[in-house]
View 1 (cartoon, rainbow, N blue to C red):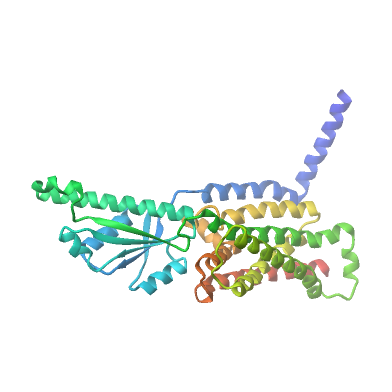
View 2 (view 1 turned 180 degrees about the horizontal axis):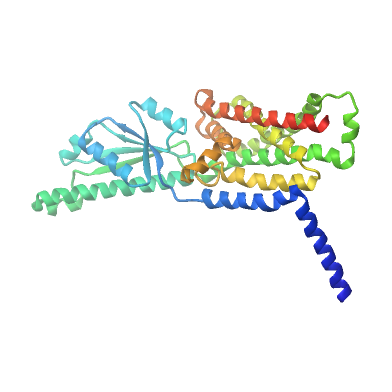
Length: 384
């Protein structure tokens, strides 16, 4: 028994010593758990606050300003844009600039002042069914409180009216909720396009991260170095097959999503696959970079595993980015998944085109070029 314990202690000491001496392993032991803790701690917030709201006020009266203030002061909504026409309202929602629009007609004050019922329209982007349901619920609560406050104010001014006003006889605002893009609020329509983006990210990142380090492990990297092949040719030979695999995967998953799950496909397939190539480029570059800094496939796999979780958490796929602290929101700007989720959902559910999605595609292109440039520089040093 004593001999067994001595052997176990010797192996344990050796493994701990090896872990302490290996700088890459020290990094993997300390920093990824802290990074995931920070990501979960700050990004994991399902409460909806400061929902971006556009104000479309055709009345410009004291009543309309009071109702707009009720939305802004609730803590749930933040007025971030103003619309002057139906077309501008549509464009704000299509671009994803706002999650809802508060539309007040030109006869709001006249109808409320005359003791009649006035309609207020709340247009909600239904791409995210969970968010849309909460927005709808918050809007109804705010308008209900607004009506109660106005009724109480009129009763205080004229107590004799207390017999008719509590019954809702007139002078109140009735909300008319309209859900766009996903009228049934089916969560499947929101998550399936996101799953497509996640599948392509994970598979491309894993395959590419293993490509170069596999050559090191089996000893063929030295043979490649003495051949006439140039670094650019080597990199293209490593990335193009995985790009083709990614395109094939997206084609298969998209077909299943549309015909099996019934997710609507309202946009352009050409734009979808064009933006997909740019999106793939960013993770091909990241995968190559991981592959060049890893000594074994196991290290590459662990590094990829620890990178994938923060990318998902900081993309808006699970938790709304608007709920995250401001400094964490700045970090999400370098996350390609954040932009591609907007692109793929815009193409699937909204049917929008390049005129709306160009900011996201341009950001994806900048990230992809930077990622590939870093990978190519590292790859040249590895081959040379």
